[in-house]
Image: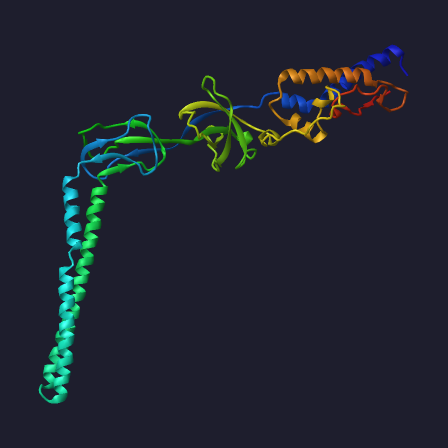
Length: 375
């Protein structure tokens, strides 16, 4: 057995360990209060289309300007198509003429009537069998000519469709819904193999970022991330994970993640740099209406939440730092007034409470610590 002074000197470090263990009970709050590790990202248009012409021509009309919002299928540019429209009109007229088919139909009816008369005359003995066979053959030839006329009329209709398609090639339409971001040509210029207009789809936007290999497996499809654009006055918005790369870049030891960012009012432009942070499941849930608080509850107790809700708040990475410091100070005050370090002489002595917890204290601050000492 040592002197009281030596025992106190041995207990002094253990007392510091006791305070350290008590503060560790508040470690979820410390983790929640600390800001999450953000990653640099880039906000890009979902799609970019360079609209060009499949045929060579001269621009006749250009109906869009920079910044115009266009819809899918909207006409953007029209090329000169005088010859093509004339061919389409000729094809339409040719397909509408059915005189040849009507004449062939009349020949078929005449040949059938001739066959009927020849059979009647054959029964009366006025004609030979050869005359009847000749009439039957002529009727069959008339039917085949009628089919040929009908087929030719169908060919004319197809030619009309080809002529219309050639005219349609002279009109350039937007393939996507988006915004005009570039015009490469003007009226009267010749178009060959280069684009005329560039369209960018910015609703939704695409967010691309590279994550370190240490976080592989922590991000899954459907997770919600907070995206803060580097734009003056812009607030953080939420984006959903759409794609996680299955192949890791060995040179940088990173993998690619792609997010979908809704932009219905087109207030965010493409090409912005941003910061992305993965939200916890509690923060990612949509806010729900809080139940009414009874008037008998004190104002301080109205800010307390059930243990499950409090745990969700603790896990949130967006708790202000000042709130974390306040909670830590409360934890120290409670530990100083609630626990007493005693040693009876046994190998282990539990820390027993000597005072009740102050009203309004968070339930997660209560802990039972065991001090182990050696003789």
